[in-house]
Amino acid sequence: MSFYDVNINPQIIEVLPPDKRNTNNQSLLQALLVPLQWVHDQLFNSYFVGSAASQYSAGTYNYLDQVIYLGQVYVSLISGNTGLPTTSTWELIQPNFIGIQERMLYNGSSLVLTYALNKEFGTVFRQPPGASDIFLTNIASVKDGFLVGVTEPKCSSIGQTTASGAIGSSWTFMYLTHFSISVPTAVLAAIGENQIRGFAAQYVPASIKFSIISY
Image (cartoon, rainbow, N blue to C red; front, side, top):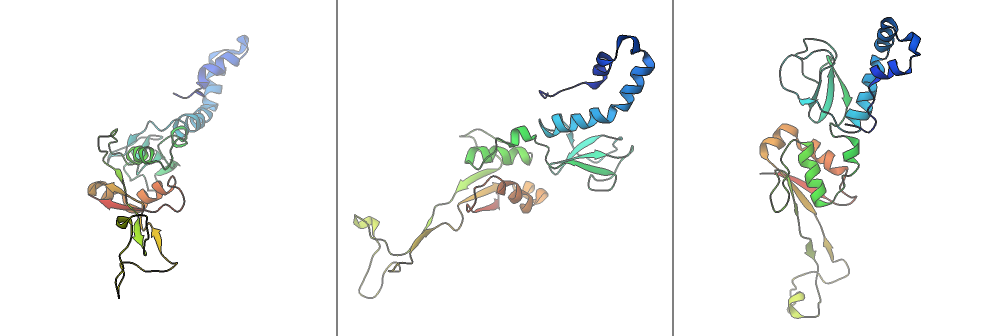
């Protein structure tokens, strides 16, 4: 339930002067304001709080029925609708079924991003130490170059003709990939890597690189 919930039908009766509250006036005004109630519900409930629609499954849908398909919310434009939500008998009304109120709290931290990925793609999130269906794994940096440290274990080796690393100013510690996102094989096949990558990229800080792997 949204803080902004309004039921327009009783509101119409309340704002009418007492001597105008007859059945005809009420019915006419309520009929005229049905579109306003619908738009209000989509904005302040579905978009702000989150959609309460069911996941799409093959079947027959009525006019104005709503479904979630690939994370997006569609509304049926006809009765007896048997087409896929991507066809002309449906209209996309919300690009993400998760409410903006919740998505504003998402960020690139490991636990939050793990929760967001599992919520977005319909898999199970488990609080640590449990393992979620979609989980993140940090990847250590790659050492590149000749190292000189305080003690011998922290130094590279050098011989008469060879050295374990390049000696010069071009050495670096580099991350080819900072972390990986592990996704169940069936989920990855159904959704596709691009969709998972696109969602995660909204919250991963710039310059942080990640890969997507199946298991």
